[in-house]
Length: 198
Image 1 (cartoon, rainbow, N blue to C red):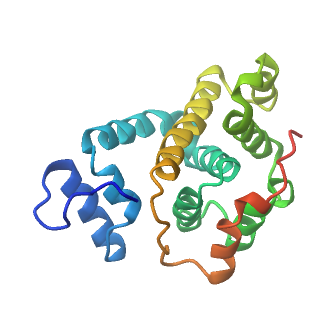
Image 2: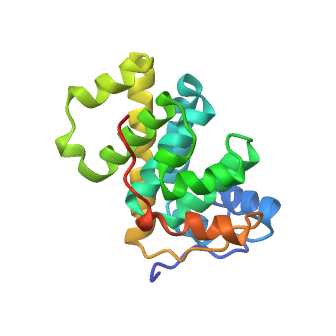
């Protein structure tokens, strides 16, 4: 990454809050945090967007949309970070999360969960080809109009964040608290099979 990031000492405002959050949680500042701290106002706006999305769809659906998009994009940063968040929140156990990273079809998910993964993946790989049929699939499994919009925003927001990190060639840090086996599964999204729309 050639972009110069704010120094660890002497940083102020929201950038300081970003650094402090990483330090208090993991004892160091992640490379992606340092990259986003170059424009802390944009990062703060991103956090505000996420807080506006999660309440209607719930944390599990938000994380499924996030993981589905990150997996489709091939974002190791976001797969590791959100894999750990999902694990810590009790949304998935380690085995299920590893299977989800490799192949959503085999992750023992219900119809609603698989629909979210499929939708998020298509949005992340071929959004121009999407039609009303894609949104209709979410409605068929019980999501409301507001939830459909917020699932879309969750996946699109992950595209924004993940693609920014990839474009800037931000190094992928080790994420504490994950087993080597789970790290290997989360870091190999390109090997995963495509998620079924069923």
